[in-house]
Image (cartoon, rainbow, N blue to C red; front, side, top):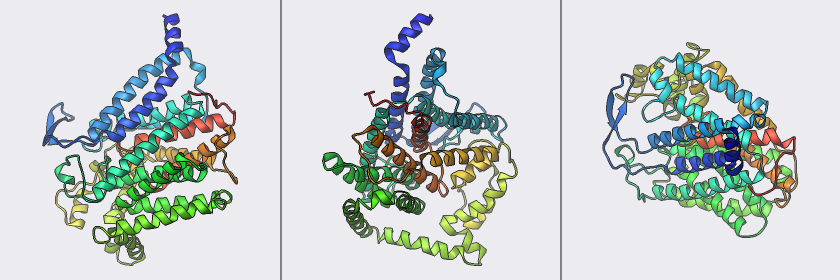
Length: 473
């Protein structure tokens, strides 16, 4: 049996299969947006009965892909680990991932609604199954990726997907949609592509855009540089058409951070930056001419909200950000009600004062099922220790990936490739982390982020030891 497993592992290279399966899963999750072809769908509930609810053509397919991928990956990993125990290293990244897994497990077991905590709330599906899959993706990538070519393959996959999804989102903004929508989204003109919501689309776009811009600035003349320029323009236009102000702010802050950290590099790229700025300005002007100047109105509303925040009127403050301040004000105290393990994954709606919210907003049936801040959501649902560990994980990654001062990057050399990988991973994680303060984790985007976080972990685990290989994978 052992000889057979050795032969199986040697011939098929399970580590490569696992890595590629995660990449394929990421790709399928991005594009698993089904036409709305039926009105209702049966969903199993906690009593083992079934509820007839609106057909979920967006989020539920992603959960299925995610859960089945994680199940297959678990089997492959168990086979792999039997003969390759020394491949899993003792490092802080693994300890943090494992700690989150333990805390999520305990939070699920002691949840107010254990069924929801395990499976996730309808139309959200971020229960323990999804959270554990995110962690597993990050863990596997961090420990199995040891070749630079894996970074390259995944980057091309995500950049290509982002460009295609951006085109689709931009078409939606102009009123063109070739996929039948559900009744909820039938008249939306803000772009959401395949992500189900403009805010979620923006969280993906802002995570990818800085890396495409960095690619354009780094490449020498040629078709790849032109492609990077076009991809940057498309994703920037897509980010604008989502009209998501939190993501716009996150992108602006990421740009400021890049200018501060990469000033020596950027000052030598004045010509490329000028071209990009001209195109970005033209995109803003063109897009703002549609839908009554939506872009300009959304931008101006940021300053209106800031003015309201400085107001002494509590009601005005609570209405800022489409009632986000009201939600934050009433969510933060909930963290202390179950400070150690929270109320359980995706159990936010069970504890939030729904009637108080409806009375304040004048809505009748709306349910607030997320805190509209990934960090507050995590604190309420899984507890303060999980929130602290997650924040420490992000800071640990950002600290270790913070780019050092450099004047140029030569992608022809192994050192240049490492420098580029480190910088783009830093910008991607930073942009997502910033927008997460005003947005939520969602099954259409989070698997991509955790995979990128896994690549960040792989870099941190390997770069000091110079373990990366330049050979083709």
